[in-house]
Amino acid sequence: LEQAIDVATTSFDPLAKLAKDVAAGAVLIATVNAVAIGYLVFSGEVSERSTRLLDRLRDAPANLTLIALVLTILVVIATKAYTGRGTPLRGGLPSGHAALAFSGWMAATYVVGAEHRFLISSIALLMAFLVAQTRIEAGVHSAVEVAYGGVLGALVTLAVFQIF
Image (cartoon, rainbow, N blue to C red; front, side, top):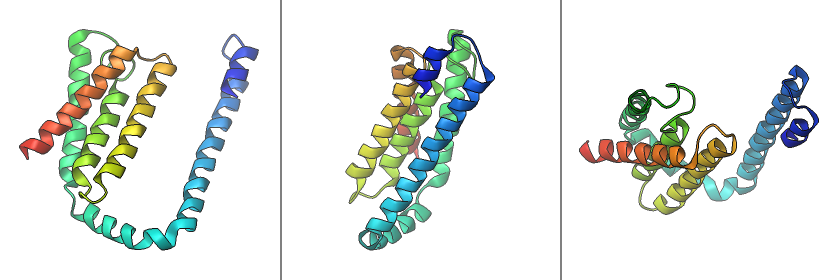
C-alpha cells in the first residue's frame, strides 16, 4: 500500500500520510490478533512452559538488561557526536535502532535458560535483523551504519553481562 501511494503522489500529501498511518495500524492490529489466536491454539501446550519462563523472567537480571540498553544508547549518541554523522536521534553512524535491537538480542540470549536458549536467541536475532533491514530499506542508514550499530549494541551488552 505504501508503495502504491508513493507512486501516486510525488510530493507530501496529508491524505497520503493518513492512508499510510491507517495501513500501519491495520498491520499492528493483524499482528496482535495473530499472536492472540496463536496463543489460544497452542495454550494447552504452552501453559506449563510459559509459567516456568515467567518465573525465570521474574528472577532474571532485569536491572542488568536495563543498564545495558541505557549504556548502548549513551554509546550510540557519543559515537554520533564523535563522528559528526547524523543527529543524536536521526540517521548517521551508528544506527541506534540496530544497536538497541542487537543489544536486546544479546540480553535475551543471556537471560533465557539453557533449555530454550537457542530458540529464543534465534527469534530475537531474526527480529534484530528485521529492524536492521527496515533502517536500510527506509533509507535512514546505509548497510555499514546498521552493521556498526548492531555490532556496537551486541558488544556493549556482552561486556555488561560479562562484567556483572
